[in-house]
Length: 283
Image (cartoon, rainbow, N blue to C red; front, side):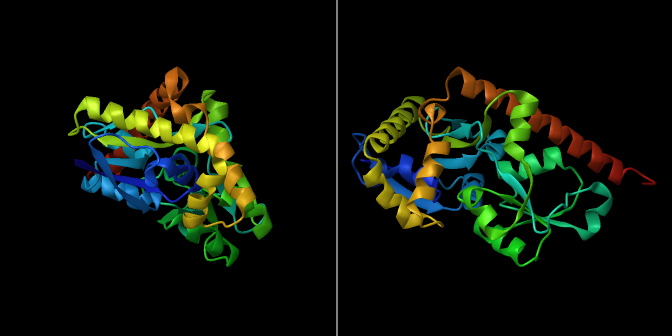
């Protein structure tokens, strides 16, 4: 019996999709699962540390580790209308480059796709602090930061907190590219045999189908790990983030990832140019 160390996030779309694997309803002969449920940035750090065989990861980080991990075609979160929201603590305010030093934006982790989108669309506009995603809205409410990039259940509850929407970063992506936004996906270590990775990929798809057929049972696991305890909000989260591309990225999903990869490498090139300019003699 081979043990597979697997990490997923505590967000409702993951606990929904992996419920049947977590509870042993879906099994793979010869494999046993050792699950870790973590915040997305903790998962990103585990991927960097190579401490998991299989893990949910931000697609931001997936671009960096493609030589060590392959992206599986099932279990991904991408789509239209799924992007992170840039929120402001005060109505009418926006990040602007000339106020960089006295404005602070909270992001949910250095390697999250949310942080990458903020850098793409608002480069050099504010100072940035990376915190656990669940801290972002409370700190905005208490005016302990100016802006925050909001993910997960907060997408549905920010208006109740009397915060202000600056921009839906996913809508910005969709407008510029015409493609669904890739948020995160399942990575498998390239040290695993390719045929084993394929078995895992198929098991994840089977788990997703089971949850879609038995949503009330999957809801029990979602409640156990969710930051938001409203069942209606949890199911809205699933309706938004679990879609046809979660079962199989397909041509559209892989095409969106190709565009994401191109923009990621363009951004890295611009970072390197800025750094080179700062380090140049006399600068």
